[in-house]
Length: 347
Image (cartoon, rainbow, N blue to C red; front, side, top):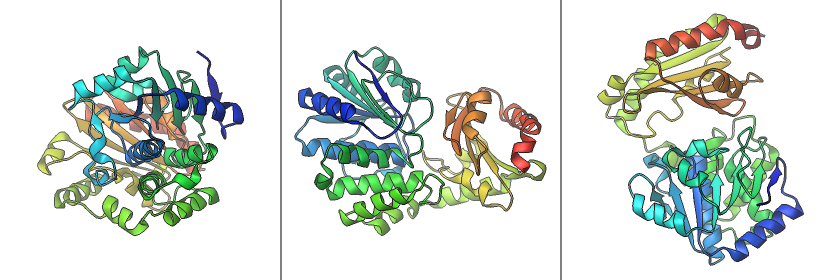
């Protein structure tokens, strides 16, 4: 199997290889990462609709469930949840002769799907913007400078010379993913090109106001009450320009926690003047871990911080990790690490 690893725009050899793979494919599967977010679902469904327009047989298989505020996207009902529809998902994977992996850089990001993907002998196409991609794919389109995988899927369609085929459904899905992964276009990865892509998606039918409402304005009362608890729990460490939030399993249960309810909570720390580093620690007793999200501003790399200390990774300014320790032990470890980063955080 040949490997084409690219870390910039796709070249003619890569595009030719993709066209060849698509021309021979009879059953295509699209897989995003575990606990898929707006970018993962938007990219998967955007690519799904594009391939369907090419009259290809396509299935989207997610490793597990995802937030309700993403389930309005066109094509949502076609998604197979590996945990809930296991037999159907396995059957689709066994029939697949081409698999697209979106918004992740290593099979380890796919939970229970990892061994199945690892043992598969079919061709893979990776489209992703995370650092340090693995080399499992026949074609790897990797660009860490991109705002989102959804922007990359837009580029992918454009590279194939089929920009004019982008429908309202494709546009809506890709717009949602770009919007969520850029923090509503405020993160540093948002470029002038990102805005031009978004403008074209609006021209092609994406209703930006409606999409924003579907994602951000459908909160439950419980979620807002949980946000109140999170903000009350926030601790500010002024000497390190750092803020962190803790949420215990008991606090989650008290507000009838649903998947996605804590989405975006970590970003509130960065809204405080002079704060450069924010974290949230969320207890998950079912998995026996503390789930962690990190955010930063400037050139402080939370990707490196998460990789070095909390078995995680991601982007320079947005990353995740986990801890097998208690909440108290995890927070104690986190605070204990800060002195060695003080110069970077206070410069």
